[in-house]
Image (cartoon, rainbow, N blue to C red; front, side, top):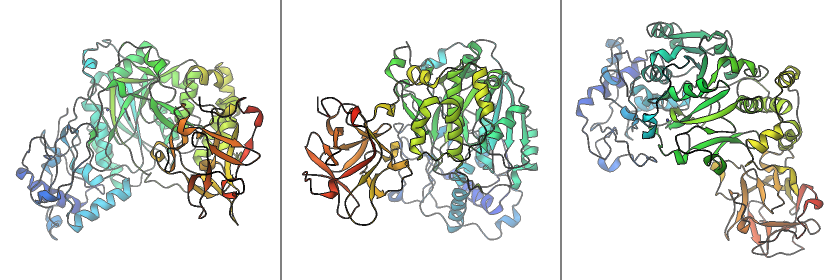
Amino acid sequence: MYSFNGRTSSFRYLGPLGGGNEDTAAAAVTLNAKFDKIRVIPNEHDNEIDNGDDSDVNQPKRPNGGKHKHHKLNEPIDSVPNDFHKNNQDAVIPLPFDGAKGFGDNGRPVILPKNVSSDVQALIDKGWENNAFNQYISDLISLHRTLPDVRDTRCKDVQYPAKLPATSVIICFHNEAWSVLLRTVHSVLDRSPPELIKEIILVDDFSNNDYLGNKLDRYVAKLGKVKVVRAKRREGLIRARLLGASVATGEVLTYLDSHCECAEGWLEPLLARIARDPTTVVCPVIDVINDGTFEYHFNRDGGSLNVGGFDWNLQFNWHGVPERERKRHKSPIEPVWSPTMAGGLFSIDRQFFEKIGTYDNGFDIWGGENLELSFKTWMCGGSLEIVPCSHVGHVFRSRSPYKWRTGVNVLKRNSIRLAEVWMDEYKKYYYERIGGELGDYGDVSSRKQLRERLNCKSFDWYIKNIYPELFVPGEAVASGEIRNMGGSGYKMCIDSAAKRSDLHKPVGLYPCHNEGGNQFWLLSNNGEIRRDDACLDFAGHDVILYPCHGSKGNQLWSYDDDLKQIRHVITGKCLEMSSLKDKLMVQECHTWNLFQQWKFSKFDKSKMPANGFVED
């Protein structure tokens, strides 16, 4: 889980492509002219824009139990008259910016008909191309759209201190869509006690869209507490955040991404934790705003809360709250400790942030900064919490719409700097994943001096006390690539990504490349062939990746280094590559069959269990 009422004002429609696109405005006018024909259908699709054919209604996915309704427009969105924009360049569009009701109100999805005109479809496609989300839909939604109160009802009874520290809210952006950026800003202003917002700092990371220049300056000048700080060159997220921090004056810094919506009561729970202990870094529950329909998905159930973790590729991941942590709490609305944070949305005491060295300014663009801040927070005297009573919605994009002209693997370089400074002897597990090729990662001596000066704890302490659930590869019997010895020509290795989205799918093969990554595997001393929390699993059909459960069974394998066979223990059969080199199979064992012979990069027989790999 990604664990997230408002007022409106009149405002000129700027269109999905930025400032004042007349064709887009005209299309919105056409849509707006039909708004009075919307009919409400209880518990059905009354937030859906329909083409008049009920058999062709798009069915939205509603994982939160179908709480949302939809608007339904009974006519298609027409093409725009050729001369419309000429006579209406200065039109003020009453929808979606006027009135308490509008598209997407109360967090509902907006569903377009399938048969939109070619003009409108071109605008939709351009919005996706530029932003990696449906900007056209976003631009139909009020900058002050209402949201449901997504908090656990018990959160509403919490009494916070009368005096809390004021915060500087820092929002970094590069060529962000107008409606998404300003909806983020207005959600902060609309749903925060005014006395707790010291300022909102918009850090423009060298945008080149015209509407984010003088037009943005004029707009935010009317809002009072909002100011724009502009980078003189493209800096990337990390240095843009540091730029924002350098001009901030609040006691607390709150970072938000530029495509968020803050929910009711989001701020007070965060500031209360910092007021209680300035060394506490706090994160809201991050709810998902659908990138296509802008539906606000949420779950009030504190029992489904997730906390942050990481794998040995140094990739952030989510997992359930450990049982040991649940036992510390009497109520599901109490803040929970989290080993790491996602990094986009959090609050931190400004002095504590400076004390622990802010971000590593040797990091480029983005990536790894969330783990660095997480590790040193815990190791250098602080704590990291997720606060269930605070919710913020976030548009999760499937790709980045931005391009960088660099030949450097930025994430790898940042991760190596992170490992060198903070991970001690555990860094070897990351280096194994990248084939031991470190390259030029710059000078980290000042960061090591910072750690020494702060007398920070070891990474071993962090693993054993903060993240004991993490699988540590140290006792693995074998590691590296698993190379098949059969077939002529190039050799094939077991190859599969192991993210959550890759689970329950057949494991593949790919020509061996000696670069780790998706070809790096471990044979644990429990008989699992795994990468992090994903294990090879065979239940009689395909060999798939499945969450490691520690109960052996379908996930129990043994390796014979003499015969080079990998045996599935409960079936007694052997892992085999198909003759076409495109599939893993489990077949009767034959010592003569080269397609059943496998070789690990590293094998340490001394780490084999005394009784071998057997089912309990």
